[in-house]
Image 1 (cartoon, helix red, strand yellow):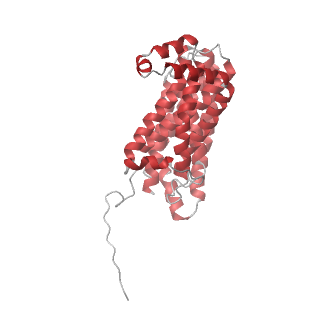
Image 2 (cartoon, helix red, strand yellow; image 1 turned 135 degrees about the vertical axis):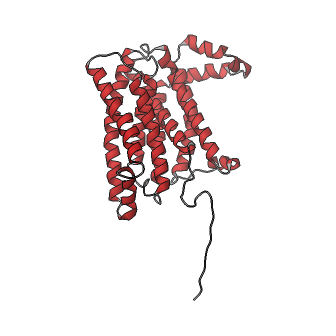
Length: 317
């Protein structure tokens, strides 16, 4: 009988598989916020009309490409072989969530920039063309042309951003959910959970700005619906982990029901990020109170905590 001993010592995966650090949760969180803006801003625009938006509201679409850029920078810092990142764009693999995500991220830039230009007034477009970097790069003609394209295809542009936003929000969950080897991620609920959470955090981000009374009222209604749906998906997620069967599935559920992530999950995600802002927004709506910044801030904290905890949990079990 032959006996073979294999000795391995990899500091990245021994004794635990903990490779993903803060970069991935931040990337997933910012992607969700951008997705929420891309979905809600066009819906708000179509509901309110073109002439009822505030100045801050008109500039909000530009927050989406900024958030994506910061998230992609964090993702780039996480890569082990950064010099080969261009290979994502040399092919398209329909069965690969990462391939879909890479191309969606590229499509988001022109879509959101055109969306932002479509909402600006003529005076604001002139101010953009007078901005020193635009003048230095001689982009004023490009900006004027892009504004014309956005005006001519406004409704199509709205729906393009909504579809891309849904794809981006769901992709952030699929990125984890398709990794079946990790029991804490092996759930089909992650994609809709992250999508709904992204809509909620996008609404919360928009409510941090003076979007007008009507705009804030509508965003709050959508956010209440998103939070209630997210609560349902959180429980479905835990049920799906338990239904996966075997000791590994039970161990994954135990992480959130008595294990190492129980306190932080139920405190930061459920209590701080869902229950408290939901109660605050319902009270504000029913009593016609002046909106505060507390509820949106708590939602953003809970959205980041949700992704941070799930990324860590998947690397434990």
